[in-house]
Image 1: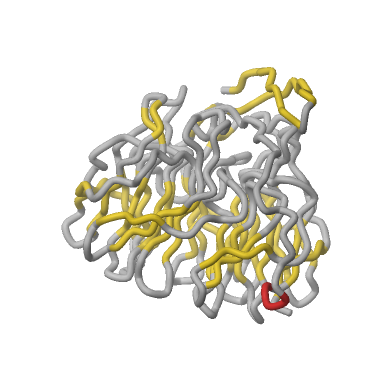
Image 2 (image 1 turned 120 degrees about the horizontal axis):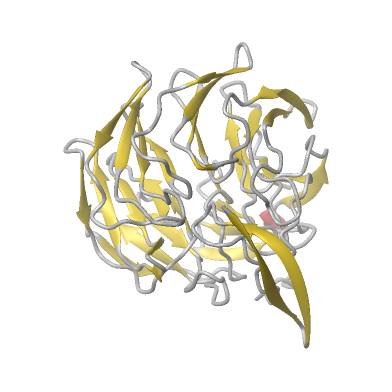
Length: 391
């Protein structure tokens, strides 16, 4: 479902009122974000790499997915295309980015039509599992499979629960964990499913201890999955839990220092998990530049380094680089990089065309990262793409 809202944006000392249609596909309206940022004017170090715009996508997109295929190209699926991210506003036709030409081309339509706030997971057999999200009539339980060789989509098995605003994590054995998220009219779910690519089947697994949507998740080196934060019944969460594929169960673990909504999470080279940014509230009025480090052995969170800008809606905006650094894009106009050697964040050369929320970051070969789409403070999706590369 979607609503119309009036949002007040503070731009310096002035207030601009924007009327925009919004979608509740992420458990909240697609709200504008404050434009105030920290450290955006800092001079990047010479080693930080550079960001530059490249060819545009075939249509504007936000809340889309971008998945690297085995041949190095990137499959771009779904997303909203119109001002306000209205339900059903395009995104039915998928496209592929070819890194040899730095160009996009259409590859056909999804079986189920429009979807956003879904997931797309590369499988061990080179296919891509596309699951859930918002469709034209609400949250869906359907999945479909993309075959790179034929560049076609086919219907997959239904999940046992409709879900949007959730995560899909490929486990070490090749199965995919599909957990939590929003069902319809914003209630969150505890239910979790496992997709088995050997049988193209979906079966229920243990439920999360707490319903949650718009949370952060990451695969740990020991094969377990950390889920942290998110929202349930309007309350932003600081709790976290761990899924163990060996038992099919979620168990509580240490709490974060603060509740985090629409934060990001990514594994570091030392085996720990970094949770980045997020918001203390649904409206995104209190954003975090802080990070927390989860120790899988101890089951505890400790404070991590501070980003140069506060950010949220960045779950798909992180990319691990070959040397262990992390590129952090989205949620601010300035892209930054976590330097693993110094454990600090530094801005990179170049910038986006403004703050971009729900932007995707996908690592390519030769140290490059492809950044795509997202919407700005007026909930306006873009067709622009950018490439980050080491200098």
